Image (cartoon, rainbow, N blue to C red; front, side):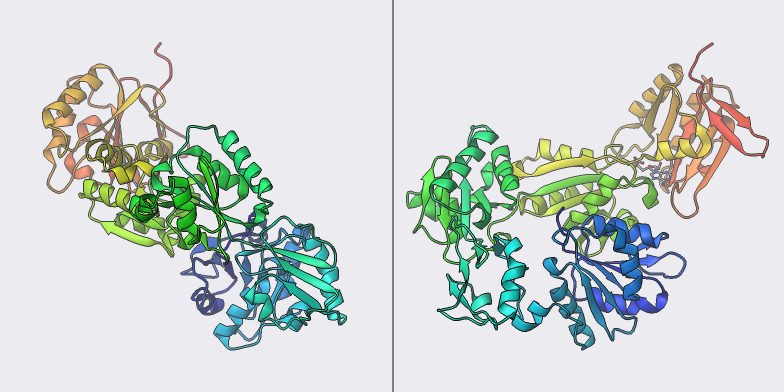
Length: 576
Ligand code: SAH
């Protein structure tokens, strides 16, 4: 399990919300979870405290409870097993007077506690002896350093606490500037090395993230490239834990071998634009060598064997500051309205994205999940411009989510994206990873609300004649009526467009009886949801608007009244 970065702040009462807000102001991406009924204006509302907490804990989310430490301890107790796998958990007093780290010592709970304590101008209640003595947690080194032998660390630290002295081999400012009892003649050793070294109980080994692996575009199979990378590392006696990232020219971003190597080594893949590599290429470096040198800033220890090159930097490198990631574009459907109709996949995508693009109303529907992301709202009509903007942002390496309501492929943005890709292709867009995540369409929500009117063959027709001429729409209605389809009408009327619905009804009346059931579903899944059943004869522009989807029954569609007075509409599956 990966420990997540963005914490969840749990509040049980409205009094704690102010404190929670202060906390998240220093923790980018953090989310406030509030107990339903007791809190408002929180990011996520929950009803079951225990389940919610245990779920977040199990997925590695750092937890900050504005509550008694005991509540957290009792709730999480059954889950506590592996200290290396547990996220930070801490309790904060409702008035901010105490910040108590409870779990996750190996995953930075003390650092988190100090950051929060600073906000309230108090001392974090740090209880880890080693941490206090050395002001530095040997067990959770800063980013850029990996401890090779954590199992040896416990005894190592107790030896230090008992007075042993330690000699430092290699360079690591966070260790040399710490209050460790450093002594060139010490019995204990801390070694900082990017080479394969065998750790011992008396020698802690830290691998600095100094190694860049670069791969140029290749037709070799993923597995073969991975094997070659491992072989090169072994031959050069480089510790895989010192690999900071996998680097490549952006033109190679679509190559699966690159992501496969990055995933296998558990590091990010980062890419360079042609401009960033131009001067190195002109000096005679191969594309892989150029990427390796660009990543580390040095060609001193360049190892290369096509299509791979390895370069080693004197200091740890931070891949997130080098080049860019492969751009991602997800086109998602949020469902008709409420979040219970949003798929877990869509929620996951919204959590990970950096940028949200969409019509303002739809972005507002995403609500809490849009917290901490760049929002690019736009007018509903500028679909093409919006699609281009989304692709351009993704080409810069951002994770862009284009938000549609309902399903993104039904009269919505997914199509706009592919139209733009098809008609206005730019080379920068080639490397973008594009993904469409489905949603529940308005017609499905409407059908579910009233029974099963789409139970047999059906079709959808948009009554908007902005993108297609009325003559086509008219033809389609005739054909659908002749074929006896149930018809879902999207975009039935707008302020400027009213006669189309009357026209549609008149055509249908030539083929279907005036009492054919018609479902009018407005604001599905949103405040003010209203689902009514009328007859085809009663269908008029006044009964619908842009927030209504209309389902017109086939000749078989039936309306039934149940004993409680409720009405259901369904279309039988058999023609008898
Ligand atoms: N992609 C959307 C459809 C977009 S077209 C989907 O799959 O649902 C816009 C039309 O969809 C509206 O005019 C209306 O007919 C219908 N619609 C979208 N959301 C709706 C909702 N919550 N309630 C009723 N109709 C809705």
